[in-house]
Image (cartoon, rainbow, N blue to C red):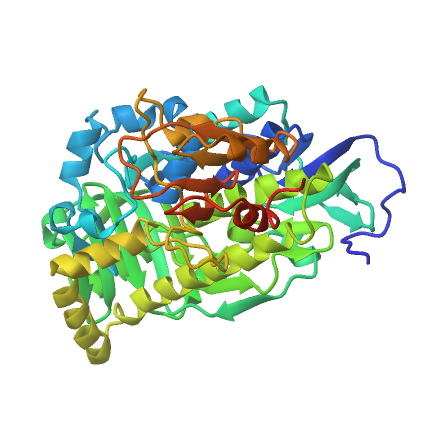
Length: 518
């Protein structure tokens, strides 16, 4: 099979890598870290020459990190490097502590309907221990990317900026990638190049989904008469405006994405017209510093792989930024794909391991797209949406309702269907704390799988040794064991097998077979 943008790519190239990644955003960088941790050679090609951008800085660049993302960073020792959570800033730039920041903001929202931390019953989440880390944190995108880039380069990843992919070919054995007059060879190519992915468009991927209902605007501006706009989120008969802080305004104009599709810059005059029409005021914008537009278009590739071409992040799925789940979804792709692709490259993968990337991540992506669509459905400026909005508002104000929405927004409910009847299988491993103070997440910095034995069974240690160092045996008593005796944990922190009674070695081998080669 051949996939190409241009036909003049030579048979030989001057650089050979295990993997070339298109895009040096958070998803591409985190995937590169995972691959390099497993001793794969990685090259990242990034079209932008400068990683700095006003859209990555406050207030535009603030992102909420959900539980699976925070756990992934923790398990790779990156949470300590990410100093930002320890010196968070409020929207006006004043330093605050993590505790202050968490108290100041709501737990999250669904279509602008907030749920609050003090109304969430975490006792319903059986496997979240007192030793578990936070379920949500705020991070600045530029700082986050800097941390990932430093880690990637420390692991030997080569990052070339100012090089956009202009063509590529794949064969049964590898991929040749072109950037202008330069050519690079690799065994695999992964598109992490965003919503307008060149890799996706040229790679023969079907991008199915739904068209937008609105154009969204995020603007940093000066308002001559800010008192004419009500604070907070305001749904009107013509759309929505949100003023969370001075000088920062979000608008939703239900124009079916018409203005965004024009690709015209949002001028002061245009933003003021939209703001006046939606708010039904004569508010005056005296200066427009930065404005960006977006929509609720929701699309997902029907397959995440075409031969030796793979997709992750926004290259594989796009949706409205409502709720801020896009970054977390993409980082989840990277965590899931990294160890599987590395094992495939090193011929240490059981048959079908790489196919499980699509099988596990595509349903998660589809759920997030539907979550986004559901929010839009109750934000429309019409009577039917207002009726639904009122019902959801009542539900989210209850303790069970707030707990459900928090579980979805924070990613606590994320689970892969691994075909096991144990309720913990497919979930993120609880952060067990051992009697000596060590925690599971701290034992996963090397990216290996774990066979966790609470009863120090010598036969399980021998069993782990059968997998040639790909499975690390860990034994010891935990402060809270949740009634478990042993667990098999994949390199991405997902529980592949768990037992409440004396472990059966044959059951462990059967559970390990799809994930670990012997």
